[in-house]
Length: 353
Ligand SMILES: [Fe+2]
Image (cartoon, rainbow, N blue to C red; front, side, top):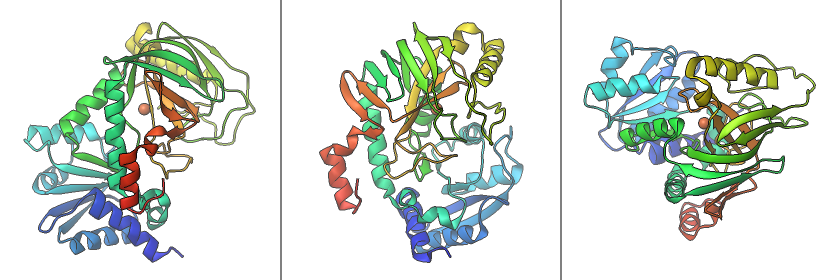
């Protein structure tokens, strides 16, 4: 049995603190058929109505790979005051459509929770305004930084300069600036990537990735010289039950798979771009836990290999990050959580951090 009160707490956090629904606003819910629980959809509609808003639900199939929005969806999004996405949607296609219609400022909320149980976790309950405050502080710190050093217990030790020109980071920032905070992710996600230049050292890629957070017996050691991947050291691991080829590169179980993905990237973008150390980032949500399919937790980060639109990820756990010689992250925990302003906000919202 799911605890109805606990579900409501998560729903309220989403509708009141993240979506900030105001009286009179129309909110279009794009609900993925077969993926979003119908009971949760009803609760979201009810919470919107209780906040004084007017909910309209549209049930859609996955739009993650579409190149054009279906006409009824394209029309509906332009007519809403806010968009609550409970579906897999191609963000770039949506943004293009909004831009073309002078509506790039439309507030859209990307809700990652698809079932009532998901609303009962400390992750979903944690006041979203505090998530935003943290995101802003991270942005301020990283924008000022000029050097970085990343280390981890499994053997990562990389130093470099913070680069402004990073394919991934730039794409992220352009989109972000364009959206001018008009896209919100619930219950919280990764921070904007930090670009890398003159990177040197070793990245200890210590677990397969998104689908599998269990650590390797021996991490894959990626040798980085002149901001470029120069070598991979790997000891064969016992094969795992869930192991398969993942063409997206979100999860990589062996060095053979990694090399194959690098070969594909090289054929498409050239050697220099494919092997460049582009950038890195991680989750920052204080209550998100390490589990497959999520990267909001603050004790995991990844480097992007490839100055390309489709970089590969090399995952590192329990990272320590220094920016200009000062601790930014320590053993998988953000040092920003100790800042007075953040602590005061946490107290005000009744959150333990
Ligand atoms: Fe990333």
